[in-house]
Amino acid sequence: MEAYDLLIVGGGPVGLFAAAMAGLHGIETAIVESLPQLGGQLTALYPEKRIFDVAGFTSITAADLADALIAQAMHYRPALRLGVTAQSLEAQEGGGHVLVTSQGELAARAILVTAGLGAFLPRRLPAEGLESFEGRGVYYIPPALREFRGKDVVVVGGGDTALDWTWEIAQHARRVYLVHRRDEFRAQPGSLDRIRQLPQVHLRTSCELRGAMGDGSLSHAVLEHLADGLQETLEAQAIVSGLGFHAQLGPLKEWGLTFQGAHAVAVDPATMATNLPGVYAAGDIAAYPGKVKLIATGFGEVGIAMGPIRTYLHPELRGGLPHSTNLKGAMERS
Ligand SMILES: Cc1cc2nc3c(=O)[nH]c(=O)nc-3n(C[C@H](O)[C@H](O)[C@H](O)COP(=O)(O)OP(=O)(O)OC[C@H]3O[C@@H](n4cnc5c(N)ncnc54)[C@H](O)[C@@H]3O)c2cc1C
Image 1 (cartoon, helix red, strand yellow):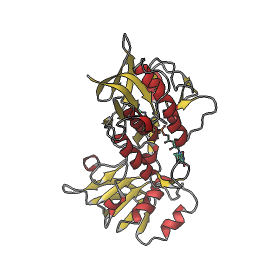
Image 2 (cartoon, protein in one colour; image 1 turned 90 degrees about the vertical axis):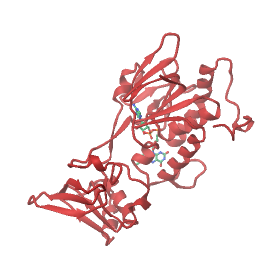
Image 3 (cartoon, protein in one colour; image 1 turned 135 degrees about the vertical axis):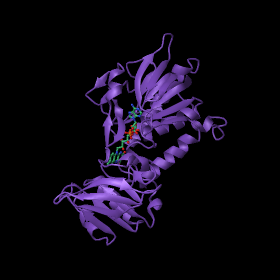
Image 4 (cartoon, protein in one colour; image 1 turned 60 degrees about the vertical axis):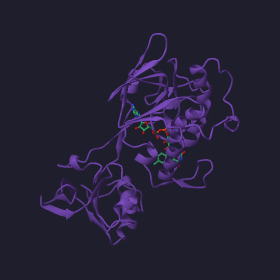
């Protein structure tokens, strides 16, 4: 069984920063993330929105912040288990834990839960023939927007996610079809108006995506007009889901952690320790009096947790974390 000093459950911004901090302080780490991509809410929920309250950046898009965090974390080469959901946690006699995941077991001496809102799973597009094109034309998390240059793209959904994607993709694509099964959209006022002004965007309301076709690569999307049942086949080299994700805390609830409310794990804010020995939590999932759910807070919580985690792993290293500026070989560490 693979064994690590520290398993980080959740590859969102807080888990990524934790991987960097852990690496910096010589702690061998693996990140377990249910999505096939790192970044958490930044990449899954609002990649193109600008963030104004992260230290060091007047403004930065969520996608760019995620990229920077990924680069910082990967400098220390944490093991990555992507598309893998942490399911149950078993404490071992004599210390240490075995994490049972959707793809096997991992052993670690300490666990840091940075699971945010829970494991993200995409709301599946209800159409036939999509699976074979997943990641190669059919996307639940879109690739870099330049991938859409000159293409005909179908975006499915009627909320903010779908409208934001339509706007962003339309800056690159030849045509974008926005397909929504209702007549009305549930999005911020103004989003629909700005999209309507783009000649390359075509609305298909009261329509459902029924299928995808292509010989090797995706070439067409099949829609059904709900009013009359007529089918329409569109040229499309990409289909993007704007249906969003649902988050499942599910398995974590069985670990024996003390929860505060339904969605947050109670921690000691002085150490970020949970009620389970060797299990810590940080970021949106961690709860204590006065908690503020912000990226900046999550980064601070990682700073608080890393000293106690290091001491838990190496009892001889007592006291606080040394400043990174005092760490010999920090630049070379990987
Ligand atoms: C629209 C929107 C705008 C926002 N704007 C701002 C802003 O301007 N400033 C700001 O500071 N904050 C903002 N936030 C909040 C910010 O995104 C969160 O505070 C931050 O993402 C929390 O990071 P995290 O790493 O704790 O959790 P998350 O980002 O939620 O990441 C947790 C990750 O853990 C994974 N995971 C969970 N359970 C499991 C499991 N069992 N197995 C494997 N993986 C698992 C999930 O799939 C997810 O990727 C915004 C949020 C939203 C939705």
